[in-house]
Length: 107
Image: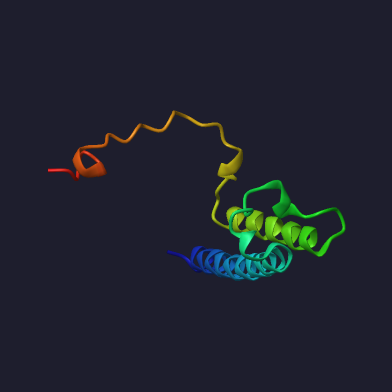
């Protein structure tokens, strides 16, 4: 392996670490804004439209910062945003056996 390859690998690893840190900070700030706005209900609203906040609000700013950090995190890993991907197949139903446990665990 030549130095250029090692350097690229090191830069890529550093970029992944930096985007991990950035995303964690942005996520914590967004969650703090959610908790401040909605209290205990924040966990239930995490994926609801209310999680974005109103235009110009601190919650919207925190949400937008989190989204930017998330996209940088994905890019550093060569991943796409799975949230916008079409559902490839329907989830398989879980067969329930005796005692209400999955059939594979009921014996």
